[in-house]
Amino acid sequence: MKKICIILSLCLFISPVMAQDQSADEAAIIVVLDDFHDAAAKADKDRYLGHFTENGVFLGTDEWERWPLKPEFTEYVGKRFEAGGWSYHSEKKKIDFSKNGNVAWFDETSISNRNDSRYRGSGVLEKIDGTWKVAQYVLSVLVYNEVAGDVGKIIAAEKAKRQE
Image 1 (cartoon, rainbow, N blue to C red):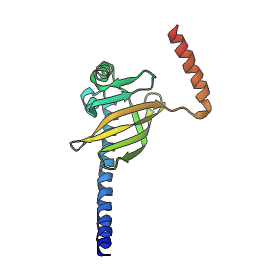
Image 2 (cartoon, helix red, strand yellow; image 1 turned 135 degrees about the horizontal axis):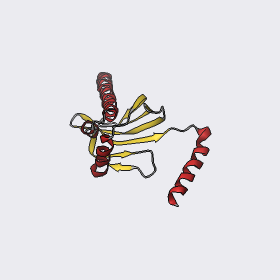
Image 3 (cartoon, one colour; image 1 turned 180 degrees about the vertical axis):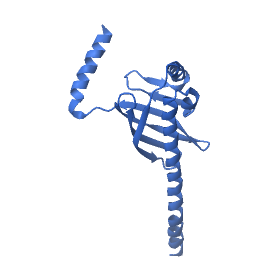
Image 4 (cartoon, rainbow, N blue to C red; image 1 turned 90 degrees about the horizontal axis):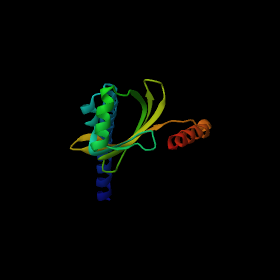
């Protein structure tokens, strides 16, 4: 009985500490994601790419867009940021953590500041030497289910046109 009381006491003590750590990590991840978007809006290549892990990947909205950080995405961002960045603001972030707390996955609704298009940003972050880094970022276009069939037809027509 004494052992059970000790175990329960430890659980009650450790649970709030773990929740505080996770809460601090969640706040840190929100800062990382917000700065990631700010760096893109300001075409700050080094700050933007600095948020990725060494083997990070960016998945864009086009079906062929799978950009490993090095060298493809680094080169693309360098050229693209010469003409200016891209600007999204995100809202409704949802973040979850692995059991050991060193991996997190997220999703966020992002709105283009240029044309109000709506996107889903999602991905995975790793905690490396105490810093959260983006291992994978996925940008998807949000489409209402009611118009998805029409969008699919437009995409099929565009694909056929590109193959001619």
